[in-house]
Length: 323
Picture 1 (cartoon, one colour):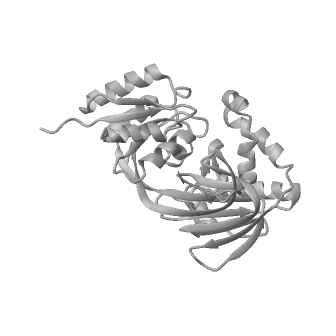
Picture 2 (spheres, rainbow, N blue to C red; picture 1 turned 180 degrees about the vertical axis):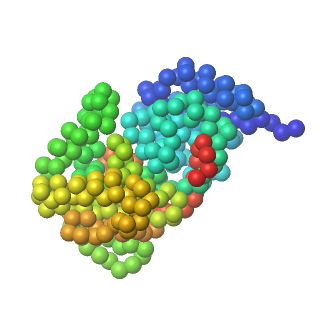
Picture 3 (cartoon, helix red, strand yellow; picture 1 turned 120 degrees about the horizontal axis):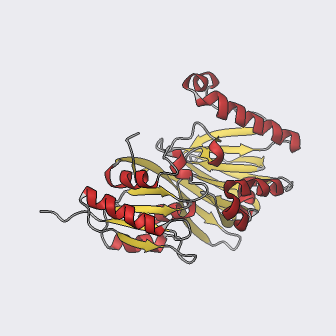
């Protein structure tokens, strides 16, 4: 007779109702015939990597992550290379990966039930090696997107206190501040080990999937399990250009592409003077000056260069139903 399986719960105590979480996990684990779950709390010093590493050392069969996007990213980074599935309990402001997996964002019992009884889906993981101004390098995983320029400046300008009170609306104020920054991003880059290219942009986003909070579909062709990044480079010309760009994104992605017929009519995203799209399995980029960079909605300081690549199907995610 084999021993019952064991789950580890990695949780951010600020984001969850721990009493409800413990009782629901205990009930669902018992119903599924699993052993008592192990519990690991995150902190400011450890947003999830060390807690997950301790869980994996115990030989757990499942990692349940209950926290925001930063906790999810940290857990994925630690689970990478281990044959252990991850289940999500959406608990933050953005819940970016959960949104792109089309999970319910406000059903705690349902999410926990799916963790123990649901289907598994393999998705891609993005890896990035960031070079700093002092020539040091650090490597991270991400599951949603990496961004520089306006995207990362918006994250850096977000008031954390306001974010806790107002949620995603706090980013609107940060966006207004960031749009006043006239600095352009001069990039030398190479896709798929191809020839060197140059671009001048306001925003560079390397995406593993395309939906953002507020039901905003930024990159509709980005898919979690296609083994590709979708690259967006934006350079609108002044305020009118930003209005034109936002209108295109909202009209094409939020309205036209929301139906299969509309998606077929719209076809692939097209390059123009404001927006440029590419797909790639890897990207090497260098910038004319240190630039703010964000991963999955969290600021990661400034980068002078980076190398990013896809690890196809390297993360197993437990969801309510198979894709």
